[in-house]
Image (cartoon, rainbow, N blue to C red):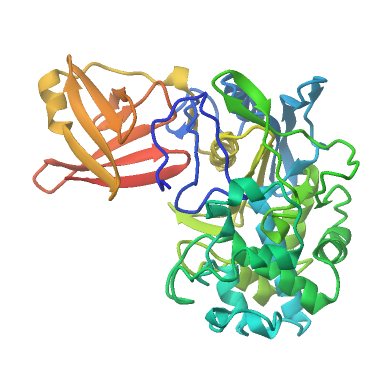
Length: 468
């Protein structure tokens, strides 16, 4: 399992389990369209520029889905791209229903908070309070730890048998049985590991505390009060009007995505919705229609690794982004909110890959008045080989993953562990980009001016690596 996304080319496919991990992914595809923040020859906040950025990803066969951008109640962009069903050439639009994957987790977290406000769930009570037959190893596992991925309960979607078991229907009890006897990854509260198992347990807590099925409770407590009539718990067997089909890229072109029984994701990733309904969700949640102010504050306060309760909260350059992304067979999703600007970005995709995250990050940047550069807009200049040699070396992103930079035939080449070498093109001092993948590299220098590391910018992430 790698925790780094680098230098892969289109055609390999991509599968994410309920959500790409906060620190990495289980299997990942890195795309062709460069949507990096930089100077661009178009006005930011312009809906036409937003559309242009999305279309670039569609034309690169990286994204298919629906997007919505709204700022302070004004909808700036509301369009569908590609097909909800490729066999029948049915287009996506704002009423197309997509599987949300791990964007579902915030709904589960809000359900827990509502039950907490009703006095039915204590955030600091052991999970055994609600699930009496929980194993002794979980005695220190609290509801709060489950919400923040600090419980230590291992994620069953990482188990070796997941691929063979994901197609088999499960009850909540039989699903929990798949991971209840596995040892904890760490003692509760002492570490952080993204865990779908934790949100399956929270699903069971919702059902136990409310006396209702998870599907019924979220419908009654969340969707109905906000008028979200196009949202619910997904089922393969149900006839669901305007549901998108899910697809995956391969070296031979697009294929129908693998099957996963929707009894498996539970509150970790089984909900469906539309961009229109999710705008109602963001407006209702952050407008105070579901939770008391103190509960909303708790929901959005990071605990560890920028993770709060079912949401990632990032602070960068004075901007706050409250977001979550998701991935499940055939679908990748992204939803973000900027509380200062009251800006919502929703990207729902029915084609696996990082397109939803990349498009979502770029649309939020544009909505904030920043700019986005597309591949054809990048300008490279020539650097003398003797200057390029200063960048040569091995840069370690993790103990098992590194990027080797070398000068070959006068060109600066970067080769990630186990992959082919790609040329780095200079666009500014110490700043380079790749043409074949969506990645940029900025080299860093120490006090003496010597190159001592690099930062890989890819998939909306900034990944530093020290020179060995």
